[in-house]
Image 1 (tube, rainbow, N blue to C red):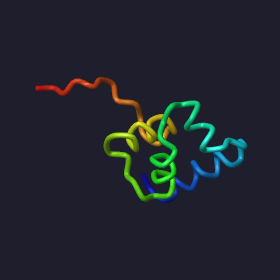
Image 2: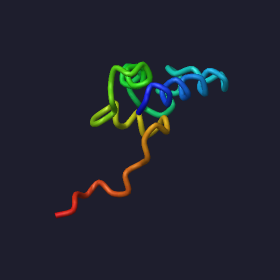
Image 3: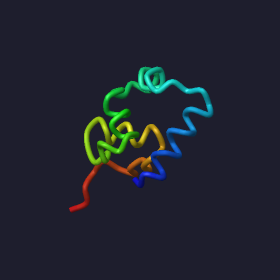
Amino acid sequence: MTAKQLASKRQELHAKGINLRALCAEKNISYQAARDLLRGRARGLRGETHKAAILLGLKPAPESTELSA
């Protein structure tokens, strides 16, 4: 995710009047993880930040959780 993508997502949330804390509570994701992600402090590679990146639309949802052998 580039800084431009993150800024665009922040502007989109602001333009729609969406409160990040309320969105996180609704989607059941960590507010801190989403905040760190949108500020560029986390990359969303695994765990809560990965889940937040998918739910915020910054990353595509994985097709499958199974690893190919």
